[in-house]
Length: 159
Image 1: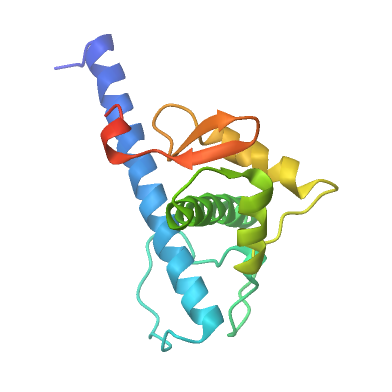
Image 2: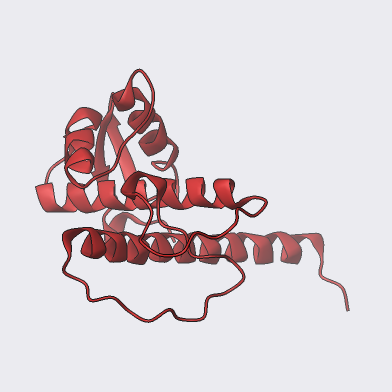
C-alpha cells in the first residue's frame, strides 16, 4: 500500500524534473508573448482561462495595458520567479543565436536590448549569479569559465 523510501525519493526526483521542464517551457512561452507584445507583432488575444496562478508579465518588461488587479499574497514572489525564468530563457536563446560561449557582460547587453533590466550596483555580477545557479546538473546552461556560459546541448543532458 505505501511507497518505500526509495520509491518515494524516485517519484520526487521525477516530479521535480517534470516541474523544472514545465517551468522552463512556461517561461519561454511567456517570454515570446511579452516580446511579441512589446514589438507589436502579436495581435491581442482574448483572455484565456488561467490556472490557479494569475498571469503576470515579467517586471522588467513592464505591465501590460489593462485594468489593474489588487495585489495578492505571494504575487511579488511569483512575478520575481517568472522574471528570473524569463531572463534565463532569454539568455539561453541569446547563446543559441550567438553560436558561441558568451561572457555575462555580453549576455547582459543582449538582454538589455530585449528590454530586461537587472537592478543593483553591478548588473553583470547579478546576472552571473543567476546564470551560475542555472548551470548545474539538469540546468539549461554550462559554465565554461569565470562568467562565461554556453547552452547545454541536447546530447549532453544527463536525463
